Length: 346
Image (cartoon, rainbow, N blue to C red; front, side, top):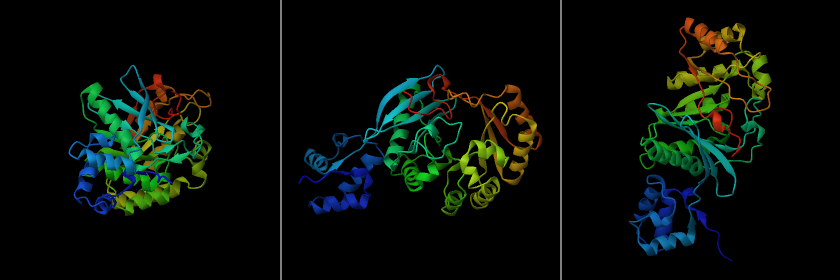
């Protein structure tokens, strides 16, 4: 029976070393291969030019590199690029390159689909199929890095885990992907340029704080009133705003980094002063800053964009309480690449 090939990127450098020693080759070959896989982002063994042809053929016999493929790419009028990323098993996720004057940001996915059923999010309408492996997350970053250099002649500057899926429900793989992206043996990016966005899972936020992670944390809040938030985000019925605040205070105590609240304002849902004042009060309990986000429709009509005056009202109230607030106008809406719109519609 033919033995199935292993995905070489599932192995540690020590395991690759064991392979080489086992076939009577030099142990240092493992570091060469590992560098090609993670630092140079090799897509196949033939790219490993400082490794002999014989050794490369041997690697092909025993291993695969299950690299993602950008199956389709769409470009927005504002320069935003959306990738439909095909995984080795034929499943698809989406990632987005967001260009601004000073930044190239990669918005990447961590799961195929999502299980949290946030009512305003297109991804939530897809059932969760599986978690992404660390290499599949890393590959999305590399693809956007290459696109930034090709189309904008600029390096990748920031990474946000804000694509499809809930990163904290794929905890181990997400942390390993961040390790590969930030490690000198990988892409060598600063963790300060990485933001993980979550709906807010208190026990996992505490775990991250205890593990002394160095990246930034964002929480999709959207209401500081339990009744309103629970209607939009069912997870709030399991872990309410008080429990979330406790975990975020623990995060700040351990990391000394403020959390960013991502907050969408919807017409007739949370676009009044009552909700704005509740947010200001909640921010007073948690060391935080706020991104007010323009809503991006997902076609079902249940949620509608708030009047611009409502966003201005939020900004005015928050700033009056000395809370740092930014109003974010979404990019890539014309190709369904904006926040909440990723749903494999390519």
